[in-house]
Amino acid sequence: MPRIRVKKSGPLKGSIKIDGAKNAVLPIIAATLLANGKCVLNSVPNLRDVHVISDLLRYLGAEIEYKDNVLTVDTSNINTYEAPYELVKKMRASFLVMGPLLARFNHTKISMPGGCAIGTRPIDLHLKGFKALGATIEMDHGFVEARTDSLKGNKLYLDFPSVGATQNIMMASVLAEGVTTIENAAEEPEIVDLANFLNEMGASVRGAGTNTIKIKGVKELHGAEHTIIPDRVEAATYMVAAAMTKGDVVLENVIIDHLKPVIAKLREADVTVEEGENSIRVIGPEAIKPIDVKTLPHPGFPTDAQAQFMAMLTVADGTGVVIETVFENRFMHVTEFNRMGANIKIDGRSAVVNGVKELVGADVTATDLRAGAALILCGLIAEGTTNVGEIYHIQRGYVDIDKKFRALGGDVSIVED
Ligand code: EPZ
Image 1 (cartoon, helix red, strand yellow):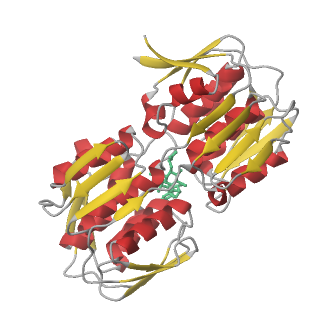
Image 2 (spheres, rainbow, N blue to C red; image 1 turned 135 degrees about the horizontal axis):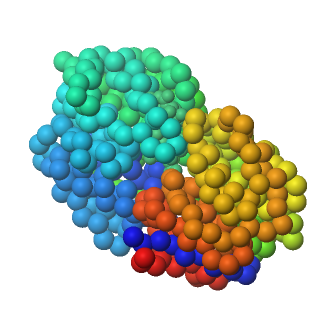
């Protein structure tokens, strides 16, 4: 099994380019099912998850090509509305095809998504939205079936600003009759990118990026060309790497506005952050000041950067507290950090991180893609060598993570056992 070997490295220096956002491109690929015709997506990251959802669309009848970060999708000949277990189980985000297929066929049958290491990941809010639009829902033998004579716009409230539920309901409502209002909607930048793409296809979506999104149904959508926004979570990961290694790193292809909570918390920890037009420079301090981090839906601090910030706090000059409010079980990385000599105690949704002088390299295991990336960060500053196993998690969300770290002077390589 391949693993990532990390050796203690000096301060990271130099510049790298951030790829397109995984969490923006996956719903946008699903949204191409709404178009009668061809879509061209630029800045599509070469990630396992992109190929998984592309294979699902091919199964449904789409023609897809991927070359040099450009994905062309022709969904003119979609010939089924059923998504099978063996394809959906590979990735929860596959469930995002449910809204588009329901909008296109008034009928769809999708295998329930698996949970994963970070929690049960229910779909009740997705289904609440589809029901509000007039669909009847049946759950049977691990499948969810939704059908309707025709979808009608409605007003609905999300008990939690779920990113996936907001996206699925937006996509289900763009062809519905009348206006749909989603209240307490998710406000993440990836929601805005999806709304922009839907509008480029001829939809009428207003308010994305706020907690109230209004969608006016239209008759049909046409193909469109779109460039995916940069990945704010990939950027946050390398920003923390620069901070932890007392480095000096420039990241190209970022949107500063998407990084505000991450920039604010790094500055609070005495990290220097210089904002460019579409680049950012991070200079690590002699000592990391301990800070408290509480994850919240956007524009709060992103849960997807929680493990990386905790890695930084393991060697801070004092005690910091990390509170995870978005997922009920996103501290799986704590045991792995403690095996490297960190001193972290979990108390429910809080983790108390007492900074230590130095971490020690060890054999560790990635439990989800962000935890895996955070273990590489720890390995960069730990004495000796760290071997990270189960790296498929990491490769789901990070393009060429070994090459990018090596370009910055990090001793990171993928080795076969
Ligand atoms: C998206 O997942 C992202 N994935 C996640 O990124 C990210 O952590 C998450 O949003 C939160 O920002 C993609 O975009 C592909 P949610 P999603 O629905 O949509 C509860 C990464 O590391 N909930 O906002 O699945 C749920 O249990 C990944 O790149 C319900 O209760 O997240 C969780 O506690 C990890 N009922 C909370 O909402 C529902 O119907 C947030 O989930 C749906 C969700």
